[in-house]
Length: 394
Image (cartoon, rainbow, N blue to C red):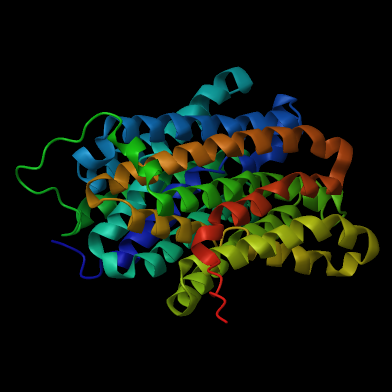
């Protein structure tokens, strides 16, 4: 028996599955206290997930696996294994030496959840890909914030409980997608030659794909570093204190509001197009990067408003890079191309996360300026798709 409406199923499954991503970050204060680690070590745990995601996406894309097997089956298996490794982190890890490999394994599994969720959308509703991908990334955003929300509602729980709830949600996501299956579009035709190893690299010879990918890479420099640094920026700016429900609540709001930014951007893209929505979001988040330290110093009463606007803008462009890239690619390599784009983008996040978590304790609010080059370079890379000068006639 199939679900009558596939889009809500995929969107909710994405929310539950991606709650694995920042499950350890929601317990950062407890981990720092219990394990005796620093803010930079929390960055290492985050980057272990990013590195695992990169390894997974490269494995799926360069081997062609993302287009050889049904996306729903890959999603299901990866969500279940991700839940397992996440649970083992909660129940068995007692320090970085045991925690890092398990977070890497979670990241590897997420490579079969997030990009394959995008392919599932295209396989069911290709004519509404931009709008629905906005909802999907909105759920990725809310899923990333969800552990902070769980931590807030269960403020008295042990840190392990928050992480185990994420594992249970990922199992539910697996069950939902297993039952749904793949859509009727993007199915391989009988007699089509098997995808050659490395065929996906030809996507970068397509100018439209290349412009979208470059915009995405700039966006990635900022996005995950901002999500990782949100609690530290709240503490550095005096809006919250460590290991309090207030910190979890504010972090949940700032990251979670990005889901509304994605949904609004998806609606707006129907009028002005995905490229222009992405450009406006990049410009908005660049503005927030630039003014955050100034507002914190000159007008601190406006600080929360800036952070909420930043949280909404920083991810609103993400689904449109996927929609633009998917549109530019031949159908037979869409899954692999999106997965490779993710892999390279997440490699970039590792650099900004590690630098950001390494300097935030010493430079505080000015860490925001580290993120500024990302959206500026993203705007430049995306330029051919959003800026079309009018021809000058005599």
